[in-house]
Image (tube, rainbow, N blue to C red):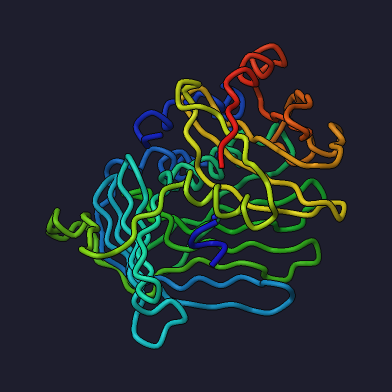
Length: 320
């Protein structure tokens, strides 16, 4: 379930994504990829897509039934699926995931920005990748244009198949260093611009337990005997998700926050933290601010300068 549960409004993020592309890079970025970056608020479709990836060396494959209308998305899973009965509804404000076996609705931050940022990073690779256009193919009944992403040695890293008029990403393949496909996202059925009932994007169930990110944080922390630290809402950052990891054999509580100002991660452990190792968890150039409090070692990691991170540290509260 890592992709479903553990993997800002789209209108706010589009200008940010495009602003990250320099004038020189914009000239070399295929127009169809630029169109995909702008597509979010306009897309309307109903489709079936297949997801494939490898988990601990084993292939995983499942099917999703997707209904999308601009910033709103509904995902269902067909009978026989490992996720049968689960429903995900995402709006510009939140993502709700219904688990029928537990009769729970888990509320999270919206995820569509993650896909947008991945596309933006390709367009803003700073020469790390060579991006070119190629002839596409017919997929799920629509014609596509292909975007090929290669490393500097000419190895294919990704292939993107985009419907050129709408900018919809119809298929995406990801490859490892020796060319083995490690991930796939592909529509098998697709209907563009259908009429969609707005009520499909409401997810409520009487009697279901509603769990928010702060509740999940408390659960994760309690599993290892932590008194969790967290950023107060007054900091301007919203908690997206949290999990426990053991990078060096020691339990480390990781929390991920977002805001219109950017992202920041909070790490908490009863042992020590290596700032250089923490920096590697960040995307791009990041700063790390570490300190000790209430018997824990804590660290904030983000693209913000260290002084901003230091001030954010003052917004830390401890709960149970």
